Image (cartoon, rainbow, N blue to C red; front, side):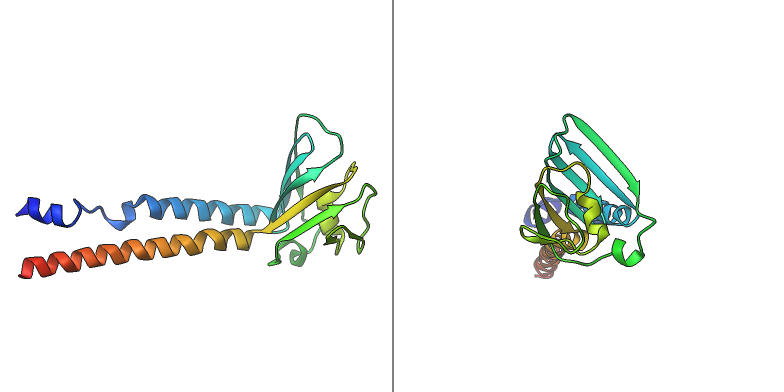
Length: 172
């Protein structure tokens, strides 16, 4: 009887809290939330040559800064001098292309508009032009959380249906 039940239900079921899908989603979303919190306190930049990845102001960004650097360069700087409104934002994705001259607040360059000195902080330094794509952390979190929640609901529903079918089979 046990062999028939296990074969009909797809084998031995482990508890949901032991699901790899559950913990992978929790870990990835936890990492994004930690990065979001970190971005409200520090500007962290990792550069290799002209490529740059930055985390600041509730946004993760990547792009190029054609300042002529070579090799690896890491920068971490406190954002305590900026108001919480500038550090914690729920903006939209933004792509900025800037010209070889240093932009000023309010300057329109390419497809981006530098709204204040905080946005300029991403782009300052020895620059001969480049581009930057900003992705808000809330959007990263949503792009992971929604498919993960749907997958978890499908998993729970599949388990519920299998248990209901098993109970019906045992009752018959």
